[in-house]
Every structure is written in C-alpha cells, then in structure tokens.
Image (cartoon, rainbow, N blue to C red; front, top):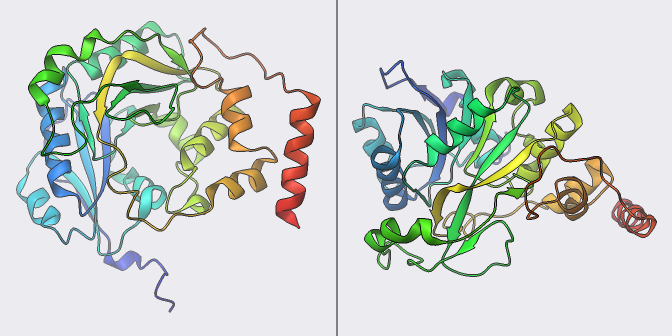
Length: 300
C-alpha cells in the first residue's frame, strides 16, 4: 500500500459532549496547532451567544492536541494519525453533526462577541435555506482581500492584543459583502448533504472553498453573503503555510471550464457590497475567450 493512501482504520470518531440544545455544529480542523486551537475554543465559549456543538478534527495531534481534546467533555472529535487535510477532515465529521447548520472555522481564528447571534438573526430573517454566510475577518496585515478588515492586533499569540480588540472591533466601518466563500462559513446541513460536502479531489484543500460555492451555485443557490457585524480575528494561515499545497487553481479550471477568479468575480461578485440574490453573471466575450484558452493550455 502506498504511504500516501488514507487508512481509515486509523480514524477515531468520538461523540464526547452531552448537550442536546445546540444551535450550530462548529467544525474546526487542527494540525499540531494546540495554542491557537485553545484560544479559538476559548473565544467560542466566552463570546458566543448560544450553545454550540464543537467538533475538532485532530490531525496527528503530536503536540498534545489529542490529550487536551480528550480532557474536554464538551468537545466531540475526529482523530487521525495522519493529516487528513481540509476536504477529508470536514467530510469525516458528518456522522457527528447534530444541528441544522454547519459552521467551518479555522483554528487560528478568534471569534468575537455575538458572532453567532448575528448569523442566527440573519437566518431567521430569511424565508429559505438556500444560502451561504460568512463572518468578516479582521486581519493584522493587508492581503488585498476585499472581504476583510485590516486591523493589527498582533499576528501571533505573543503579540495578540485581546483586550484592545474586544474594546474596538466594532469601530471598523464595513458594508455587508457579496461572495461568501471564506471561513467562518455557515451552510445549512441539508445543502451540505445535497452537494456532498467538500470535494476530495481538491485535497488537502486549496481552492476547495470556491469549489463548494460553485457546487451550491449549480444547485441554484444565489444568496452568498458576508456579514460585516459578525466578526472574527484571523491571525493568518498558521497551518496552511506548513502544508504541501495542491494545484487547486488548475483543478477548478479543469472541472468547471472557468477560472476561480472568473467565478468569484463575475458569479459571486466577491467583495462588492451585498445587494441580495446574485443575478446571472454577465461575462464578456474576451473573458470567455481567456477561460477557453487557459483550459486549452492546461489540457495540452
């Protein structure tokens, strides 16, 4: 058996928590990142309005993550001796999910007060379940992400200005934005099941987020909203910097015949002010030709 083949006999899926009145099911993949994971979960416990099911994907857990999770009675978990990546990691949590809504969170995020109540209020105001929602990230450095707020409260645990952040995070002015693909990402469980969760051909995970949005788009979903008032602090790619990345850009092009950039710009209108249901895309002849040429070049 090749060494990179997944051995599912090494997986442990553990139902640990006993609370039956959860609002959302939060899935947090973690790969030997215990200090950030602890902070993330503390922020959930301290800053959430409702009680939620917390599910942690423990990849390897060589830094004490497994032992710590096992000592926390309110956390369900999946343990893999090998790093599952995002796609397999999120999908394998499905037997544990108990609520009508899944929230995917990175372990290097600090969730800010009432992040969940704002999600909840948005859901209650809608008359349908055909949507994807994202919180708005505050990040310490400018990465040219039109969906994020730049606010430097530290880019590590050592430099983290938690008290200052809690006092001022609401002061940043930003509109709700279109094009939800970024975590924290909320999706109705029924939609997750309809599209089959994450696409494992994007494993370990690069470009799996826009792929999930594209699958929802093909299903008929047109409500992709980033909510400004629901905020998290994002330290920034503490795990993805260590992983060997897949060529997700090429895989997306091959799968759908357009680039991820074309999809997020012309379909999702990512980063633009939110204006409700997204209309059908208007793509220029030049842009269509560019996509065809890129696909031809890739196939060659």
